[in-house]
Length: 294
Image (cartoon, rainbow, N blue to C red; front, side, top):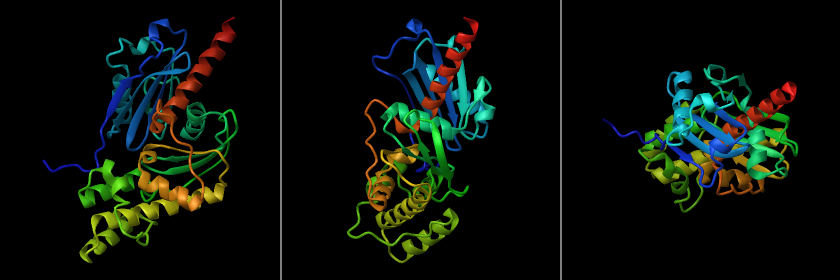
């Protein structure tokens, strides 16, 4: 079997020191089914209890189930003990156990507000299928947003294509993009098919893998920069989604913006922002239902 360089590591974890679900009044879950990965965040009384990040397969419903099972693994928690589940992401309507579906734009804004605090005004969500520039208020409510077109260039899927092309582990792409003497000109950023074709030509010309990665990372960063320019970036600025872990792209975005994104708190994974936002919306919906019964 050939090595799959694009395949990143799946993971799940119970948060150290989190309130046990048996002691919680409200247990909620957010399920973010993206085009590349499915994330679940389980919260106990509004604090992160456990989470998982799994590969999205051809079946969105099964991917959601796998991710939920991953988040519950080893905790003793079962689905029937979770009071409310909200689905989000492009596969949000296919989450079989969700009581409500909420757009990933709203969930990423709410999740970013929780992770970084009320000073966040601009959120860049860099996912597997698209990128979204989101403006929000101090409560994490969306005030404006823009999305790029549904092309893999400038997304996580585009980076996966290049990892496979160059036979480089996807986790290494960011660091390798800086292993160049001088910054090369960007490759085509309009379409990943053209960018890939251009990269093959550059390799034949004698370009190193590192130089090609740098050129593609630069192209991704510029594509995202133009999106952010259109929506207008306000401090504080944060980056969510899987590509937030690739410093080769994020640092080049910051350079073009002349603005540094807030560092991610060690306690949270920025790829989980959408799932966490969904879990927080679920908590608010439970509280709303409880008020009606009083």
